[in-house]
Image (cartoon, rainbow, N blue to C red; front, side, top):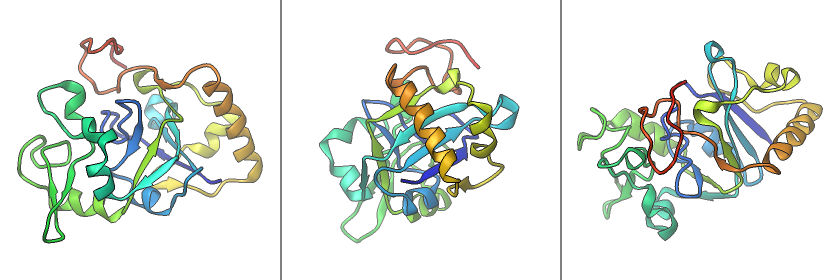
Amino acid sequence: MKLYSYIIKHDTGFSPNPFHGFCTLACCKPAIRRCSNIGDWVVGVSPKRHGNRLVYAMQIEEKLTFEQYWNDKRFQSKKPDISSIRGKNGDNIYEPLLNGRWKQHPSFHTKPKFTAHEDEKNKGKDLSGGWVLVSQKFIYFGRKARPIPPELATYLSVCRGHKCKFPSDVIERWNTFIEDILTKQRGIVANPCEFPEINENNLEQKGC
């Protein structure tokens, strides 16, 4: 088992997308999506200015190709729907075409956002990851990001890119920390930090 940690600069609910019963990482962080394996942990930490807190953690249970993700009945609700707040954050945005190319649907990664104008830079970066990470074993704190014990925070916080090389004792401490959390609660704890301050489907309302 490996542990991957990175800084979430924009907590929008798009990457990762914690909605509809699954936490998915389909866009951004191509190196993590490409190199990680089932059983690995992916951890998102808030920037230093927000205290390097735990925004989310997911243990990878599936790795799907983009074509599998697009066609899987379980993830049709993750296709973007700009008419709703959560729907806007849909990360199932890449439709396979008959010519071997991909259509990027209106989403956070089109330019401008939520329009039909595809952003080739974002498209290339997303697809270069090759895989979509899927988990039902996750915790997403969003705007209620929680403190990380100091003995772990020093290792998990990064400046850019990601970390995946940790001493064995750090991984053991991480496993103890996260398993204790998951025995008490799983899934979504609060809205993404950048959600507007409204109540949708009983998610949290207040800002960061």
